[in-house]
Image: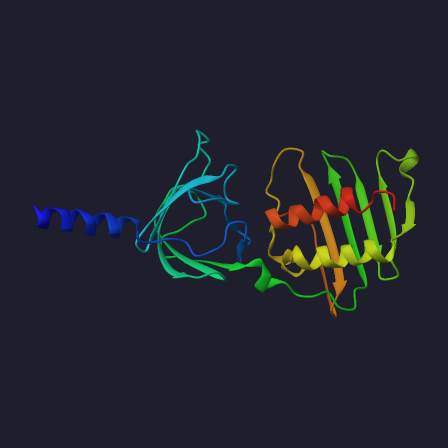
Length: 234
């Protein structure tokens, strides 16, 4: 009887032993801009999916399951190669989503470790055109902003200057939203009447311009900030 109890306890311990060491709410991101976040002790958010997913850790294995009936959601079984507060490295063992391949490691690093402080900012230009209409935003080093869209009379250009507080918020948001990782965003696929986005950034002695890209989750947050919050009256 004691042997059976001991064996049962051992099996239960083995099944429930593992756990993810990242903090709830901390965002980790891979080089390919896949985003990972623990929502609570049973749900995680992976940017490959439209919904949060159920997860379970058994020893050194992470099991991800659908949460709901959305057929496009990702499911998979991963071996945990590294697991600490700042990083999570997974090796896919079983997977049910295109774009994930067996033996491809997924290396997630906390966003805090990927932040590059903005220095010597010169200019940011973002343009959107297509199904959602036309918008253009230009922010310069002297804190001047110009904004235009289809809703403006004859596409009038609105020009204003950011306060010191708003400008510092803008610089901080660029850093926290990993503006220098934008070049890793993928090109838009061939879809019917898409909305294209172009963006160029000149800062830290670097310049890049991306045309017709599809923003990752964290860069979509940046886009919403630029095109909606930043242009509100000071």
